[in-house]
Amino acid sequence: MSESQLWDAVDDYVTAHLAPDDETLEAAVRDSETAGLPQIAVTAPQGKFLHLLALIQGARTVLEIGTLGGYSTIWLARALPADGRLVSLEYSARHAEVATRNIARAGLDKLVEVRVGPALESLPRLADENPAPFDLVFIDADKANNPHYVEWALRLTRAGSLIVVDNVVRGGRVADADDTSPDVVGTRAALELIGSHPRLSGTALQTVGAKGYDGFALARVLA
Ligand code: SAH
Ligand code: DHB
Ligand code: MG
Image (tube, rainbow, N blue to C red; front, side):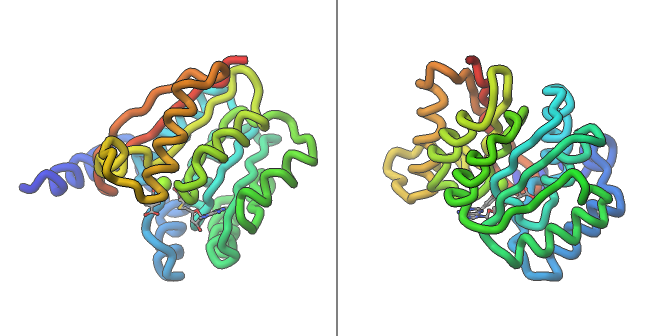
């Protein structure tokens, strides 16, 4: 068995026993695929991880940057109380349309709002509305803008909020100083910002699984 076959097998095992995909999540994956969306959503164990983080955090409000077909959105929103709120920002109107259907089928449309447009335009508009601070921010869009998204997350959160960044390892490319592609440069800048910011305490964890070798960064807002 190759290494990646092993990762797949373990992800299948963990999914079956600890993060079973129900019909709603399966339908979200299926319809995203049928609509031709890239298959880059978090895996089921990762979705369950996000769900648990939101529960541990006692989150009532979540901000997500990068909706795609709403798969991670559904895992996160399912951790919220009935009067909770999740705002998800998505560049592509087509992705947002698929996500909106998936979220409605999950019965979460009262909690979730998908806003279409480049996140760097949606974020200042959102800030202008003076929303209640978000308890958790999940950053999972264009990686080149990751440092900007961390800065915006800081403006839209409170002491004790949690910021999660997806795809911070990218097969190890993050640690390759010769790799100067915009996504890797953006991710490194975000990690170094988290590491040096007086208001943040964070770390990054490497992951393997059905979507390859990657990782999450977590940062707690301190003050
Ligand atoms: N969080 C999703 C996956 C998101 S994939 C999940 O795990 O289920 C990344 C998404 O970010 C894509 O849908 C892409 O269209 C979107 N995106 C890319 N650039 C963006 C931008 N500038 N603003 C907002 N969304 C963007
Ligand atoms: C890509 C984006 C993601 O958010 C992800 O989880 C995996 C891959 C990408 O743009 O390739
Ligand atoms: Mg991702």
